[in-house]
Length: 307
Image 1 (cartoon, rainbow, N blue to C red):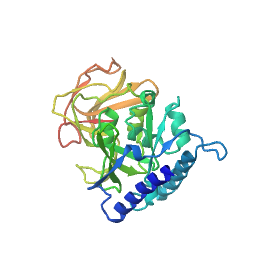
Image 2 (image 1 turned 180 degrees about the vertical axis):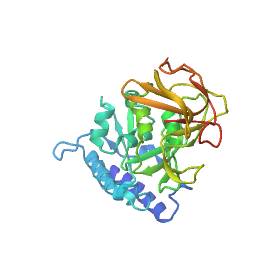
Image 3 (image 1 turned 120 degrees about the vertical axis):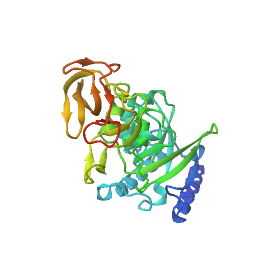
Image 4 (image 1 turned 45 degrees about the vertical axis):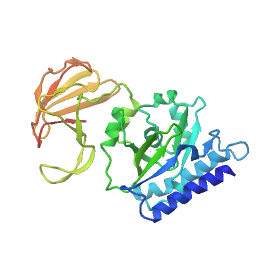
């Protein structure tokens, strides 16, 4: 009875705010951590399972049907109010892969909502927050490289919604959700290989992320294959992880560039360098300075193109 009452209050609040037109990018609502229904076990069996978990599975299934419509995020207004719900679950020795497989809400949704920089981070978490809507949950206070990278991708022209969670300890945290959003290749590389990849600059500002954009030089719509990290000219550039330099030189688009091969069939590229400081076939560590930030090639100012 208490579960149903708490859920109805949450649903009604979100429903009223959506239809009042204030549940969007410029306004937020505050959700209380202790109001989220508690899942006791990740067992949806009709005979011996948890009724709360069965309800959660049903809501995830309904939300998935909307956010995958036409192959793109559906955004606010396309989902019913009761599909924007959150549940709590106290972990019982599950690893990350088994958790997301049972919940079917996606790696990105669970990881971003719970500040997990990698699958192993779940070992240090006692209670996890499970959203009913698959998507990306971008914190207002990013801490890890993964979260900083994710925060750079916030595009509030996309339909989404903002909300604040008030935790039991009195702290509050704001999020912006992009329903149906998912990790791109770069985000997935950082998430699945925590501690192995790092940003190649110590200090940076992400000015352009992976995806479609208007090329600032040509004015054409193209897919930007990496990240642009703005930094002063001459800033040291480091490998994202250890490896071997397999290609370097000059390109009309990338300017002075370096490509490094890493274990696990990974490779990374560093473009627009002012100078190349490491020779071809040189084995590098994460502490090796391989070049310096510049503006060579197709560039509007000092920055590192990283992919």
